[in-house]
Length: 191
Ligand code: ADP
Image (cartoon, protein in one colour):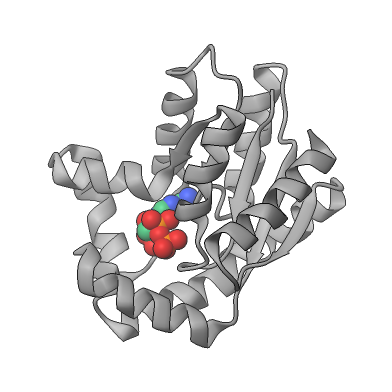
């Protein structure tokens, strides 16, 4: 199995690159942001819980997020591997993911960290907001809060994966195909 964490600030291109990676390596894509948005659209109880946090650019509480992730992994017992997009975002989430994969006799192969300067991220997210209909992309204050939450809660996870010799830092500016090429080189080192 190849299990990939794709990591980086909001707007770094995780979703775009995940689509290309899952096709090449035949992986199941699990995006916690997409799962929350589907639940909000379906007006589920989980969606209602998540919405108030997401609209402010805050993280959804770990317990809710971890349970949702675990259920999704367990729905795919025959997967070739997974690409985790937007998860983990906190240390308890990373620990829960390791424990879950361990119980399935597998583990994370590599953590791909996309690096993009803040000002480029703000421009990308404001542009995405014009077409995505995402409430959290429509307001520069919410965008800046998401970047601050990323710096505070999520960026420290780089050390978690570095200590396991699984961190690959990738320059996230360039064409989609250039960045994809850099990511594939990094994956192939760990596959
Ligand atoms: P982006 O990376 O552009 O911020 P996502 O679609 O990954 O977009 O996430 C959107 C929002 O969903 C986050 O700002 C957060 O509120 C919530 N969310 C997604 N994944 C997680 C997670 N692993 N833990 C907590 N909240 C999450």
